[in-house]
Length: 216
Image (tube, rainbow, N blue to C red; front, side):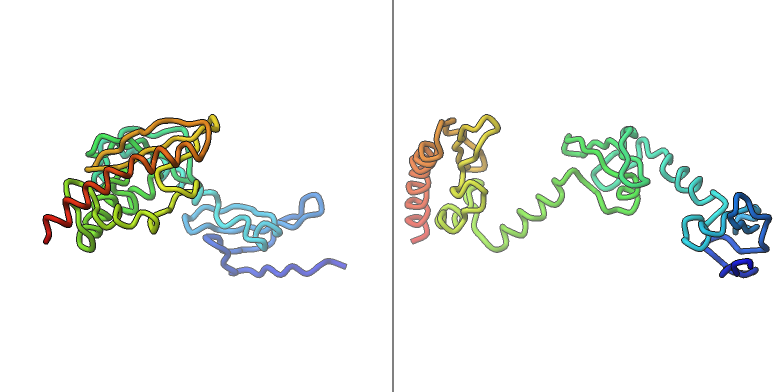
C-alpha cells in the first residue's frame, strides 16, 4: 500500500511552489516544483517537508553575490573599507577597514552596510567620555571623583585596581594620571605589585589636596 504524501500541488514552501509528484528514485519520493525566479526543479519530498530546500538554488547564489559585493573605498561612518579577507562571519565577508583615527579593524560586510559598525570603537569611547564629563569633574585629564574613591573603583579581575597578571605569571602595576598611563614595574608576587601601586597612589593625594584647596 502506498504511503500518502503530505505535500499537495500548489503548496508553497519558501520560494518553491509544488506542481506535481515526480517519479520515485531509490524508494524516495520527489516533487516537481517551480521557483519564484521561474526555474523548475525536482526536489526530494523529505527535503521539502523538512524545509531543507526552499529554492532552486537561487537564494544561495543571491547571498553569494551579496557577500562578494565590492566595498573597496566606501566609507561607513569613520571607517573606510580597504579589502576583503578570507574570513567569514556566517555568510558575510569580513572586510579590513581603517578608521579615521588610524586604527584598523575587521568587520562583517553586512554590519558595515547596515550601519551597525561605524568606527574602530573610538566613536563610542568619545561618547562615553562626553557622558562622563557631564556627571564628573576632569582636571588635566584626571577624573577627580575616580581617584578620590579608589576603593569603590576596583573593577579588574585581580582584585586591586592597576594590578594585572601577565601571561608569564608575573604581576604588573600601573597607574593613570593626567591622561597618561605609567608603568610601575613587573613583580614576582601580587603583594609586591599592590605595594607598588599603593606607593604610586600617593601622587593622587597631592593632586586632591591642591584641587580641594583651589575650590575653597
